[in-house]
Length: 337
Image 1 (cartoon, rainbow, N blue to C red):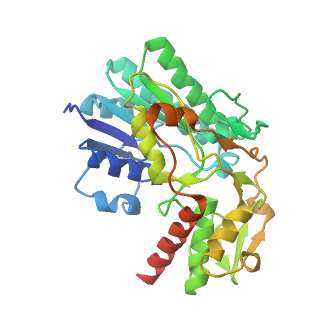
Image 2 (tube, rainbow, N blue to C red):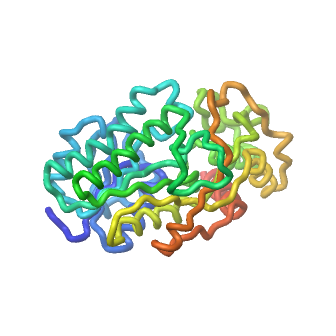
């Protein structure tokens, strides 16, 4: 079933995977999306792709399912976006985080090597590999200082990408993506928590969705968050998957920081999102200890100069535009019910 343009996308039901599948299909690829088998078959992010891509089931913990899929399709490109992708959960699930996020990519690269495939491999690395490094601006040469189980797992995978690249001349690269958001982001992430809460409050929803503690996201008009002083570099996910694609089209594999080189606090996030619909965030947001991280990553911006020079990539949507778009989309969802 070989194809000159066939790509395997892991984590295809997530935010990044669904946007990447959209992009690859637009470019004429045959897309094989990999998802974990469950009794839940409602995948909102890829509903619009039904009949347009192949959906396979497998698990990054199972090397046999990975090797079977790769031997069947012999893809020209693999984009590994699957992970236990929630840093806050990695403290309570450190072992499964390591099995999926650290070792999953190695299982893919080992399968490529064992099957002797001419396949280009993209690994979704994360800004979390820099952890608590005390630099205002970081780039590809900044030392790594991961300080949570998720970041450490991502760092192991990132270093193994370089190991396979050097040891086996494999076309493998890591995209060091800083925070990137969209209306397809899950409610485990603070940006979507905030924009969904704004939509709930603005439209007067009586039964808000639940947060990770199993409680209504909004109770008595209030949203509970963690550290409001945490700082992030936020961009638009749909633009970031364009960078992933461009990395695998180059003559030589490299790792790239993908970011906006801007920095905003959670307070800024709340002020912008609530302010978009005329609400004062201070009347609706409280900091709660149960949502605090044991360790916090340092405040830093991502320098995307290498990506701009080599890939011709740079961010287009601003922080304010992104949040306004997300709020509008969440309000639209409720109004269409």
